[in-house]
Length: 133
Image (cartoon, rainbow, N blue to C red; front, side, top):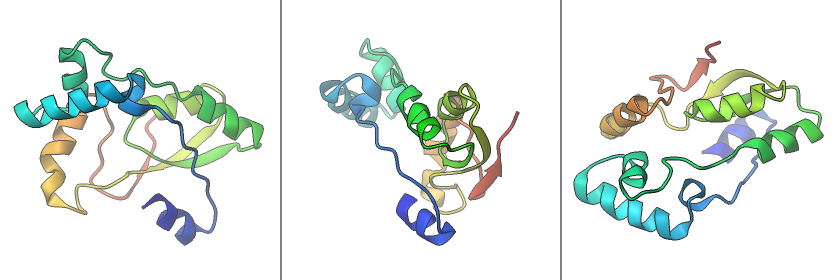
């Protein structure tokens, strides 16, 4: 989806940060996935109940890469306010954010997005959303 958006827009970059299990590790990822499926909770809730951080990731490296490339503003594909904060902390303007998959694209994900919203994610019902200050 990301590469399709970049192709459509004619410009963009993918920055891959290897952070299995929200930086808790691959074992934590697998344990949390099983627990989340068994009890119907979110990944974050599963991590916490297993004694891990709900999200131990840092997006500082991605922000540093963009800053090094001279990027001053972006349209960010995310539902995570932490990713927006990581960029704005180094004075990269997040003009818009493109939701990874909006509720309008697939109604089967309504429950998933409701759980994400409870965790503080900025869930939208359209593909592009202006970033809230």
